Image 1 (cartoon, rainbow, N blue to C red):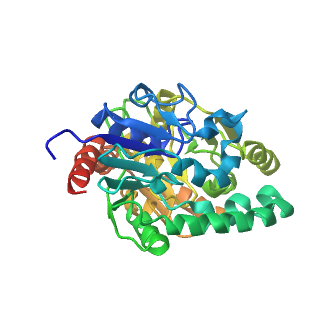
Image 2 (image 1 turned 90 degrees about the horizontal axis):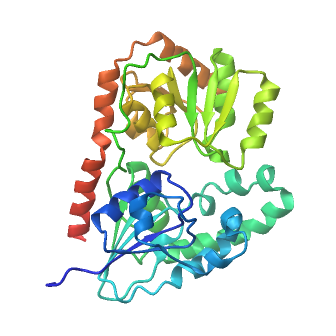
Image 3 (image 1 turned 30 degrees about the vertical axis):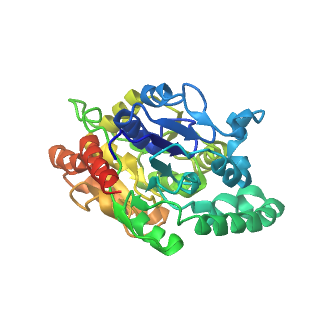
Length: 367
């Protein structure tokens, strides 16, 4: 091809700078002339390189109150993603944890999907999101066939990308299981220049940095910190906040909810914490790598992406089972272990942004 390829970037939604948006940020810097498509965009909620591309949105953008209710529009997502006209593009790069991978390209274009995960709630985590305890018996019963239909659509459209790249070996195995497709693995980028140690001395508190949603298992961290006798600080917001605050009050531990905080404040918290807790199963988990880049150990459930980001006894503690008692034991083991901040940071440098940029560029070239 003699001319520069026309590039389309497709992302599920733009409502804040989480791990997926940090991947997109790198791609927007790599392709500053690309067109960016997304279901919903809350202006000024993401980084300047993303905002600069003036994201093109779906009809969902015009739904009244969409900022608050976009997750409730899940049954409409397949229609919304398929309405984008990508006929004029030579290269489509989707960054997908929901429906972006199912965007429809023309016959001559190539489509690389950087997959964060096949959508959890439609496959193996329905109960964590839409079980009776989360939404009530009636709503759960109504949603089950809806999510079943969404899973069937998700599987049927898995052929649309020409190539998959997964964020971890754990996600690559999920892609094989649900999509019957192979995927290379390129770990997401972490800004290890920004997330770095300083002269701050660690204080005696544990830290959780997370969206407050059911599968993150923040309730487990609250009980484990109480059993271990250490204060817990929780940075992040989400629909579980009120329930988790009630649990913390009922348990009687020393728990402080900090709400959503800036990147600078998160970095300061990492530097000051005794350790960072990761009680839920993650597909990759950006937070453990950010914490390790700041020289702090991570106490994580020994499942999913943590098996690829946390080296037991070197960069943190891997907990064998998902229980408050097991995590309390992990916390006590952390207290007894002498960790070296420089060694922990070297471990995190494997996930640096420059490593990701080079790897994803090679994957795009091969696609």
